[in-house]
Image 1 (cartoon, rainbow, N blue to C red):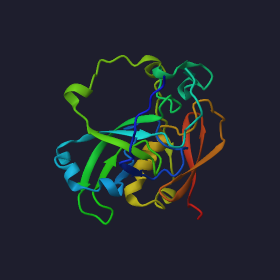
Image 2: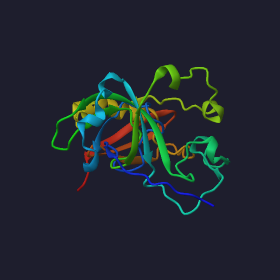
Image 3: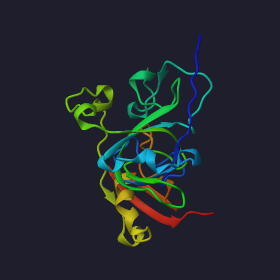
Image 4: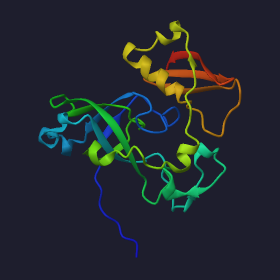
Amino acid sequence: MSQTIPMHIIARIRSDFPTKFGIPRQSGLADAPARIVFEPEYRNADALRGIEGYSHLWLLWHFSEAEREGWSPTVRPPKLGGNRRMGVFATRSPFRPNAIGLSSVRLDRAELQTPEGPVLHVLGADLMDGTPILDIKPYLAYTDAHPDAAGGFAYKVLQRTLPVVCPPALLARLPEDRREALLSVLAQDPRPGYQDEQGRVYGFPFAGFEVRFSVSDGRLTVVSIEPAEG
């Protein structure tokens, strides 16, 4: 008989990605800044006592925008072009029996007294704005890091970064503290792994702007950066 256990949302991420498109495929690939804002019940600075001593944190979170009825034992990873099926537990697909995500982020600083209660400022999150966070744990290099670990098919198709061309006048439209983050996001190639239409223009919202780009001959070119509507 299937059993369930209660879970509580302790916080939500506040990031520059209001939609799924454009979000880095894994945590740590781009130093995009984000904030962790706790739910009222958990706005207690004592719960963060000692956290400033850690450089990195584990976030356990809910794939709130990827829920499906039931589950499948196999999925189509985008890294394999979206055509080859692999076992769900051999992937990081959001479509799982329990829609739980795991991300390692860098702790920039902790603000214990703000109008929103204690807030954690992190870098490298791969979460959409508003994503529910279920738990936060310290990252411990002596036990969590395994440099010689085998990477399975994910390492065999490890994505290379793209050179990014962005005219300075366009980049200057972004706040200065968001420019490097955008360039690193673009270098990871935000397009789905099964799409490689040369010259096609793609777009995604980032930090209150709509960013449009195209890819040709292995080079990504930013076409426009405009304030997002609404």
